Each structure stands twice: as C-alpha cells, then as structure tokens.
Amino acid sequence: MVFSSTIFLFAFLPLFLAVYFVMPWRPAKNVVLLLFSLLFYAWGEPVYVWLMVASICFNWLFAFIIGKCGEGRTAPKRFWLVMALAANLLVLGFYKYQGFLAENVNRALGEEFIAELNLALPIGISFFTLQAITYVVDVYRDEVKVQKNPLYLGMYIAMFPQLVAGPIVRYSDIEAEIDNRRATLEGFAQGLRLFCVGLGKKVLLANTAGVLADSLLPREAAEIGFVGCFSGVAAYTFQIYFDFSGYSDMAIGLGKMMGFEYPRNFNYPYTSKSATEFWRRWHMSLGGFFRDYVYIPLGGNRVSTPRFVLNTMIVWGLTGIWHGAAWNFLLWGLYWGVLILLEKFFVMKVLDRLPRFVSHIWCIVLFFFGWLLFAVTGLSNVGEWFCAMFGAYGWLGTSTLWELQSWSYVSLVPIFIVGSLPWAPWLRKKIQAWAEGDPKREIVAAPQKGNTAVPPCQVVCEGPVPAGRARAVTAVNVLADVSLLAVFVLSCMSVVSSSYNPFIYFQF
Image (cartoon, rainbow, N blue to C red; front, side, top):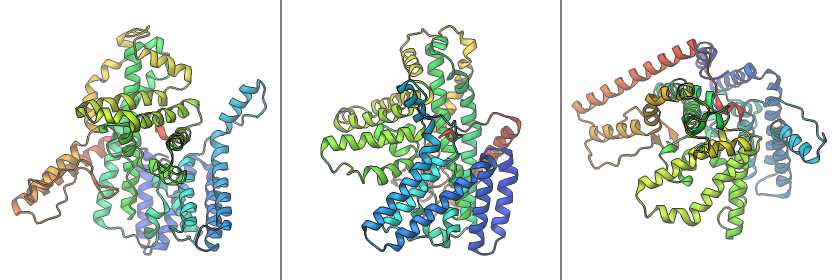
C-alpha cells in the first residue's frame, strides 16, 4: 500500500483518522496507531509482519537490559549493545545482501559455494532497522529513557507514515510526543497541506517524469544515443526527487495531523552549490544517521588526514551499499565520497573565487552523473551510458527522435525546474515581510521552522499586521488552500484513472 493509491486515500486513511480521533485518551490512540501500522505493513508484506514484530520485541528486550545496567558506558552495556547491533544488522544483511554475497562469492570461486535464496526484500527494512538502531544506541548513551511499554516502542518502529520510506525518525525526536503530544486543528491543517503538496509532487510530477525514465533507462546506450541517454537520466533526476521528497512531505504531513513533528528530509537539494551542500539538503535524516552513528564514533574529522579520508570513504561506502545490494550503488557512494574529499582539500578553494552560477553548474553536473550511476544497473551498462553522454553513439543512436519521445516532454521541463526551486517559500517570506511592514527583514528560502517542515505556501505573520495587509495575507492563504485543493483533486483523478504508480524507494 502506497500513499498515492486509492485504497490508502479513500479507505485506509479515512478509517484510521476516524478511529484514531474518536479515541478519548492517548494510550488508546497509541495502540490504534500500532495496530493500523501493522495492518498497513501487512497489506503489502503479510509474510513479513512477523519480522517486524520480532524486530520490535528483540530491540525492546535489548534496550531494557541495557537500561538495567545503569548509567555510564560500562562493559556489560557495551556487550548488550554489540548484541543488539549484531541482531539488527544480521537481519538486514540476510534479507538485503544474501543474494548479492552469494552471487559474487560463487562467481569468484567458479562454483555454487553459497546457495542464492532469492529472498524478497521486506519493504522498509532499511528504514525501520536504522530507527531501531538509533533507539538502542541512544539508550546506551543515556540520551533517552528506556521505553518500558513494548507496545509504545512497537508504535515507534512500525509507525506507518514513515515506515517504508522515511524520514528516519530517531526515538529522541518523538520521545516526549509518545505520551504528551497534542493534536490541534492548526497542526492538522498544516499536515493536510503538506500531504497535498507531497501527493502532487508524487502523482503529478514524479509519475510524469517516470514514464519517460522507465521507457529509456532499460535500453542500450548504442540504441538511443546522446539524446536518449541524456533524456533518460534527466527524467530520472526529476522523478527521484519528486518521488522521494513528495513521499517525505506526505509522511511529515501525516505525522503533523497526529501531533508528531518528524524531521525534514529535503531542503531543495537541486539549488546546492557543492556536493557537500547537496548532501546537507538531500535525504537529511539518512545523512544525520551516518554522521551521528558512524562518522563521529569513528573519530569524525578530529583525526589525522589519512584517518579522516578513511572515515569519509567508509561512511560513503556504507551509504551507497545501504541503498541497494549492487556494485553500482557502492560505486555511487564512493563517487560522492571522493567528490566531497576533493571539495574539502581543493575544489571549494577554487569555486569560492568564482561566480555563484559556476558553483551551481558544478553541482548540477555532479548529481546528474551521480544519478546515472544510481539509475543504470550493471557496471558495463553504466560505462556505455557514460560514453554516450560524450557522443560515442551519436545524437540518436539507432533510433529516431520520434521513437525516443523525448521531444514531447520539453514543455514540461520548466514545470519540473520550477517545482525543484524554493520560489513558493521565498514568495511566502516576501509577503510575510511586507505584511509586517519590515522591508529589511531577511528573506529565507527554506520553508522551515527549526528542523521541521511547514507548508511552503502558507503565510504566517509573527508580529502585528495592519488591517488592510492582514486581509491581503488572508486572501493569499485562501488562494493557496484553493490551489492545494485543486492539486489534491487532480492527484486523486490521476490515481483513479492511471495504473502507473511506481515508488522508487520501495526497492531500497
């Protein structure tokens, strides 16, 4: 079940909200959220619900034992932490990497030394495993209290809004909200607006770009030439952003409806001026996880230069292989690691002396070729596509411009570009500053308060506003809500009428 499906939009979500808000007290709401989350997971993975329940049980048990060992990082606590990490990583490794390991070992030995089990990847296992790890590690660090109620821990690990595709919500993010959250009409409205924004990104933009990407990416580079390869990667570049950021917006919006504040996951990454900045804006919750639970424990940058380089490459190698059990994902991670090191030691010193547009072009080239590694499977195919980008197979390969269908998407490119830029929050801040009568007020592009997302189209004035300007702000907000309603209606019409509704990050 995906958020952009008829069963979710017209059955699951209305039923859940009705039952959830009918419950008069919070413990009952928590149990309802847990039960509906397990139902949500079982809809697509009935065989693996037991795996989810097992993860909840053994992480609750390990954390409970670690908590009983007292404060401080004692030897018994370290032992049980290692056991908990081993259990989580073994489960993740078995289901996600067994086939990859068996294939490569057998290929190296020239015989079937390890049987390939061809296991189906449990949906969301990469996300809920990392969430469970953050809880156990934070208990070990004495940064959060042990959750004594296994049902509440189950609610945290299995919570359906961010279960299958993030953002990665740490237990510390919602620890206080498990018992003390407060759902308000304003929060529900903000969450609904974010959900509509995300649904529009996913259905109207990502799915449209995905049609072209799916038609070109499986083909041979020699067959489609420069135009086909460039169009395929460009379409995928927009598809993966709108697909994943849209899903994250919907997840954060659903959390807001219930009174949870999930962390932001995207902050207009395609406006970045460097690889380092790009990864501060793209999949922010994953970057935060690897920074706080891998990079810093390894020593971070407070080590010698060779060790710093090693720490960086370890983190980016793990980031790549986390996304998928294939060599191109590992290469993709190492690609970004090398680029970030180059920027650290050399490139940024040059870019800082050049006009800003040069830095933007640099970053666009980086993530464009990065998505080539991500989208095209097989290292030989990646090499052919890379050569095609430099004209190795001519403009069109063996195809005609009509057969490639790239031309029919040219008119949509401005829409995709505008959708990737922070024009809406910029305009919101402009109107907000005008309404409050402060022309010198700083205009901030990011639609955020702290580390949580807010609807980019809503104008929220914090100071006294003259009556005439207040009416103008109200009119702008009404127009924004009407526009979001139109987006929601169009998205629902598209969901009902189309059978094409992929979601890229399910495979990770």
